[in-house]
Amino acid sequence: MEEENLVPVEKAKSCFGRLGWALCAYAMVIVVLQLVAVAIGGVLFAMGVNVLENAWFLWAASFIPQYLVGVPLFLLMLHKMPVVEQSQTKLGGGKFWALLLMCFPVMFIGNLVGTFLSGLLSGGTAQNGVEAMVSGGNPLILFTVVILAPLVEELVFRKQLLDRCAQYGEKTAMVFSALTFALFHMNLFQFFYAFGMGLIFAYVYLRTRRLRYPVLMHMIINFMGSVVPLWVVSNLDLDALSNLNPQNLDQEMLAAILPGLLIYLAYVVVQLVLVIAGLVIGIVMRKSLTLRPTPEELPREGRVKTVYANVGFILFVVVCVVVFSFNL
Image (cartoon, rainbow, N blue to C red):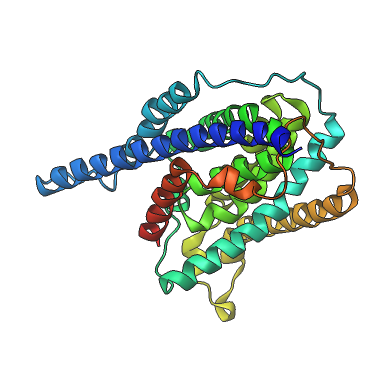
């Protein structure tokens, strides 16, 4: 019996070891190229050209290393790894929207935890760099966040990873996919909700083997978290609100601030409804969201060591944690 279990364990060690090295290379090349971009920005600043506050330069420094260098390198390193083919199935509309709604409480609670811990560990000085970048309203950044990022991230952290490691246990693969996805965001603000949503996206992909479903969910979540808040804020008369004095409130001032306030209140109510609906659906559906046994399921004993105790994955974690600390 022990000899039979040894074969899948050794195969799994090899599989997760190679995935770990690919993730490590993916993260390291992005960090190094982004540091090079910052150094170039510093040189230009010393020459009197301030590009470090330019949205287009920040976009190029943030995303070109990832999409034009990191992703091709990652795919190249996984090219010869065996893929376990599975038949594709459809996800009914009702289940799609139910699983999507479950993302909202995960995002809400995860965001609260990440923001609280970031503030606590930094003494209140940490800033959410992604939120700051998106708040500028640059069309290319919004396109990247809403369209490009979901496509690339689901390709990498769902399809490429799960197609290669799901045979060692669906729960094992889901946690591995979600954890690497959360670490890859490289900041504490996003870590917790990225992990939670990564679990949901991984479950959806494993049940369907169709990338379109987690990609679409990811796009909707990013749209709701970036474009919609920007539009809501754009309808607020911030100058009028900052100078608001209830004792001198007249009809003209009320007309200026009321439409934006109503939109903002409607947005808050909708968000609360989505969060509560997601919680209720999650509680109701919890027993139906089952995981299936796999032929090469890893034994419980030693599973964590088999999956995570390899040099590549450990270095990947180190790189991400170092960047976490700098972001704090």
